[in-house]
Image: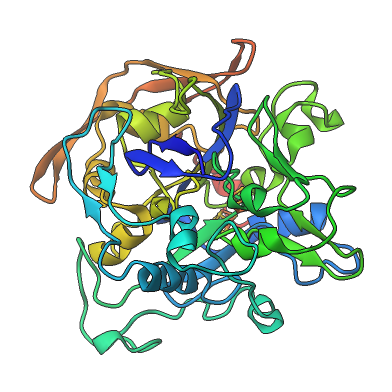
Length: 422
Ligand code: SF4
Ligand code: SF4
């Protein structure tokens, strides 16, 4: 297998094809701290793409309660266990001096799903370590919703005393998921028909419905389980990143890049999606004023989901502040402590960039900040806090201003005559 460079794990790794990178890459940041599991995203996707016969079990976008929930059930526990069985001692990260953009999280010492496949000496014609979920595992997308980890790790029991940050005793969190439109897609690597392709213009990963013969190798290989088999058409389907919106060909977009349906519907305002520029070696080209570049590479508050699997996913998460760090580190890698610390004590620029989430459905390509007056001075958890009413301005694909918003939210006082009306 050729060797390719995977910056998220800080080293080269084996992959069935030579590396090829798109000019721009579809990417997104989800702020877990804000998700309320309203499932508006889930239903926005369902009512757009998977409402037809044979798609009843399909949820291209889903929100599961961690640690017990999962769609399909136990998808992450199962693949992590398979990796550990293939490499019992080796699945850990090695801290090393980061060389900036290339290895921001250190180096993953263990085996990815592409490397572990060889280690297990599997005899079937599979290029990627994976498994096919059972029908039953697909049937309860929201299983164990709101079930916390309680005393002694018992599911759905509560501690009887209160608790405080930094870590809660009784905890759960919501993990919103779509296809990560990975840089090294396992689905694409596994397909014997070469029916899966990654678009050179935006890195969106699609299944050619004419080429697919429904062998389900992609379903088996995707570690995030984001390709799904449709029984009545006998082909596989997956999230298409609402590409007519992203490319501006949907009539609603007016010809300009627009965020996906699941992003636009987000009530909790946790989601920001964008298109980032990619260098020849697959790393993100420096683009200091791009909000996603800033969140992932400058502030480093947003981390990839299970980077150790090796697909170089393009979905990034601001981890939840209240969850035990060991759990988060196995999910997001070693950058967790730094990300939570920065998110908990945001500097002036981070606070401004966080205001950009969901102020518009247009894709933001650049931001600027205009400084405003000091409006608050105090302390939080032992650190000084100063808040300025800065204005952050978002720009679109053509450099046009999309919107501007401020740190302080405007206060609207309803006239007494309307006090009880809605
Ligand atoms: S998340 Fe899965 S389906 Fe999506 S690109 Fe990555 S490997 Fe393929
Ligand atoms: S719409 Fe937003 S807040 Fe609601 S469940 Fe989805 S990601 Fe969470």
